[in-house]
Length: 417
Image (cartoon, rainbow, N blue to C red; front, side, top):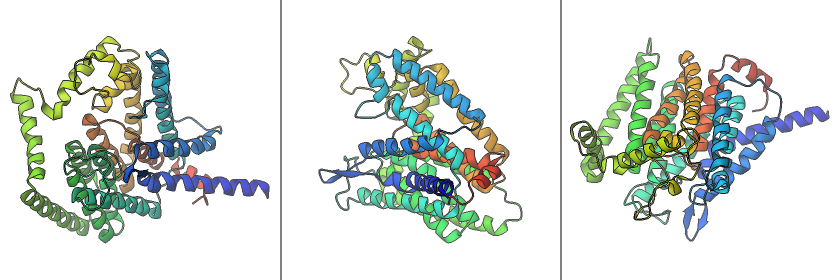
């Protein structure tokens, strides 16, 4: 009787944690002088949830291949933290980012937990998308200046509950492929509503990195989806595509900043290959990347340490101080060294390679497209506590869903939902 009670309690806790990350984590915020504060709320929420996840992971299980790469990356990050100029800062992070070693460990716990228990059943998927829609409603209010929902002003750009338009865009890039999956595989009406809301929200973010990443992710879904004997679904997709064209064209016609933002992608892309002067391209990212490569060259093995780019660069006379490379991959190399970046990429590549073998499953394909969307936008963005735990959860669900022994795992947890 006691063992049965403990097992039922364990299953309830697992279910609660799954719902907490996918549905409630994006909504975490706290009152801050009449506005929504999100950074601390999500950081402490991450630590709280990952602590209970870790307790459930403290049991003997076979370590997956990709987890060896993950643990290797964490070991290198820990070594870099201990060798950094300010070890305490590297371990704990600063109050403006909370991106220290402790946060990296919490991210890893979220991934491992979801890779072992993260079954994405329909009700959880719909709740997850509904939660995303609520964030979008706040984003629309910000874009149209309706109500006091501002964290800081972003010149007419929406940012939801993510603290920054670019982070908001990366969050939406994860949801778009999943809403397309619902549109094609579940209920096309609710799927269309989800997709169109997320599409419009993405436009209001004005996040070019997310526009590029989402386009590539959605294109990969469409290209590799099994369209054979699915004439009705092809019609639905064509109709949805026409709606996007009409909406996108209309918005650019009535809202010049959106049109100018879209045009800037092609303009700067052309200048990148035709001009010798690249200063200022990508909102100055190319200049930042050049400085990042210099730091990598100085400390290629262990990096300068998490949260240490601000100190490693000579910025005494700079008006704006740089603390990130604005490219997740360069950030990893700068902070923890090139070997850790290789381990990090090997970890993600191993997951995607296994998922590719099961891409015939539409859910796996949608999850893989969401991960691809995030990975491409990450070339121009940074990992942040408001969004990265969500990405870890989806990456973990992808790993769970594409495992060959997923059936046995599901059977061993039968009844926990």
